[in-house]
Image (cartoon, rainbow, N blue to C red; front, side, top):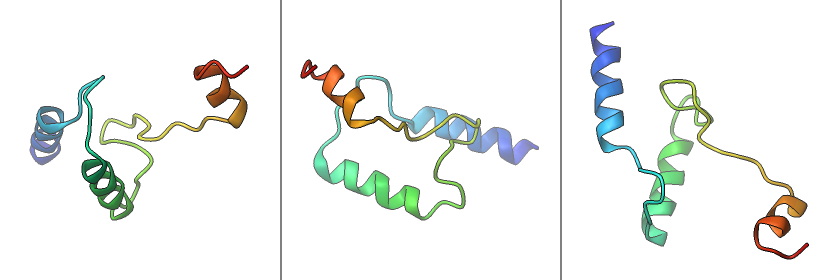
Length: 65
């Protein structure tokens, strides 16, 4: 249990913050690292790491509808 707490604390310290900009290389590395995870779809707390948007949702977000 102590190990899980330590891992969680480290993850929170080095995690991305809302609105933080990434370079293309950083984005590619992030996806590459996620692909190596046993469960790349959630973080250690169970929160999703991906969201799925339909074409219509993307169009609305960018004012195309």
